[in-house]
Length: 117
Image 1: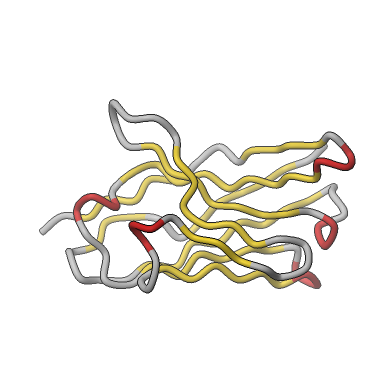
Image 2: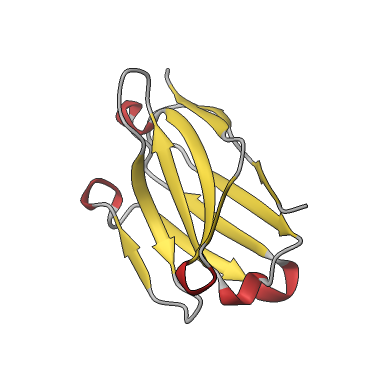
């Protein structure tokens, strides 16, 4: 059974940093595009950052220069380093694995990030 398990969330002060991790199991991880999405209360889920199977990355404009997505294929893990956090970054963050050629799309359960003083 495919599992995406997020970790590393929590409470951080504005200007602080967090690193989210997403460990994947039961998928050919290196073949999947991996992404981080977030959903704040009352808002739609939005893409934060994505890294393709080939290592190309793209970011939401709101996080460019502050967030970095990386992947470690041998560890089946994708990371999101979040720096200079703002209150508007507070949300539930979801890990996503997508491989359109296999018509496969998976989501983690989400992890809460709170940015508050």
